[in-house]
Amino acid sequence: MPRKHSRGQRAAHDRTDPDLFFGESKRKQNRRKDHQLCGQVQRALSEALGADFGDDVLNQLWVVRVEPAPTASRLLVWVAGPPDVAPDVIIERLGRISGLLRTEVAAAIARKRVPHLLYAIHTGEPEA
Image 1 (tube, rainbow, N blue to C red):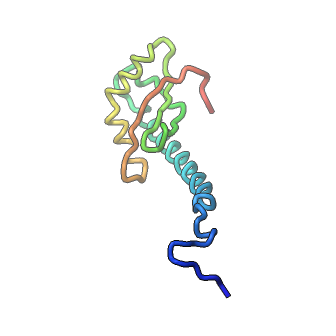
Image 2: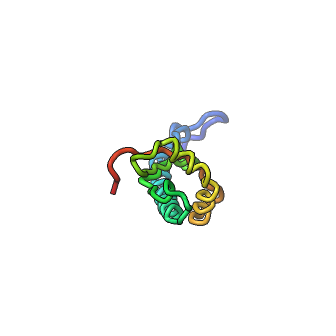
Image 3: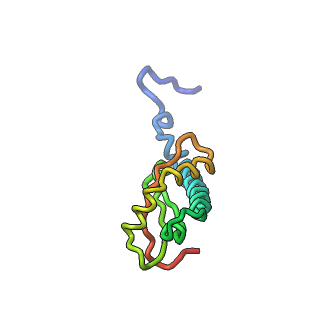
């Protein structure tokens, strides 16, 4: 016969944190979705930067990678460009077209809110 607990008392299994059982798979799912979103954003930005802006600096940029910063509501976009152009010039030029780039991202993803985009300059070798 199962033991009844008085009001305020619970069996040990009732006090177990559900995150112990479900938290890890939820985090893995979120990481997978974040990775998927970053890939979509990278493709959308790469296509958008392929347009002719009438600006030599912008026309030579490419997206190296996109990563959550620290969550998918803010994404860090790593771009590379001509080595003879100062990084602050590249960031300033991207700032000029940031609204357009964010609009392109919004059209490419299926999210209620478009992530805020932050830009950083990649100075290493191109990634595959």
